[in-house]
Image 1 (cartoon, rainbow, N blue to C red):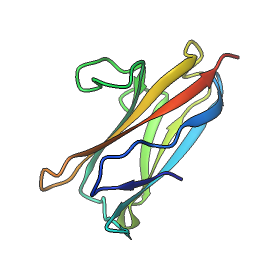
Image 2: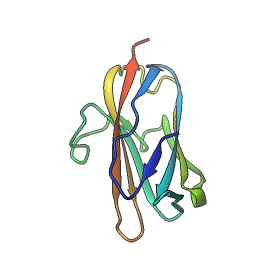
Image 3: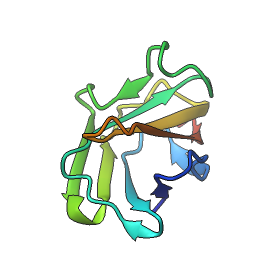
Image 4: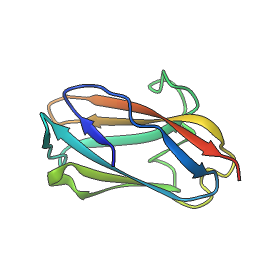
Length: 122
């Protein structure tokens, strides 16, 4: 489970062994100063993009607005959220892409992270 430390913008660990048609669940843990951060009132965005920079202005391959992607917060008080990508959502996607996570807190404390995802063709 990747840990997102809100006091620094860091790269997420690379994800491998993901075959294009397969489903995937990615669980994240948000911490601040080493302790779980309550994300109950935060806006969370996740998306996959075809380039490592410029996610603010580029169209995602998929994101949480797509029907095949769901973001849930099973334990928001302890900073835990999950992204679920359904089977066949990425059938036509393969190679290196980048995931972005943006957490926008109620005090306008926006943080973002990115990490490479390698998707293998089926």
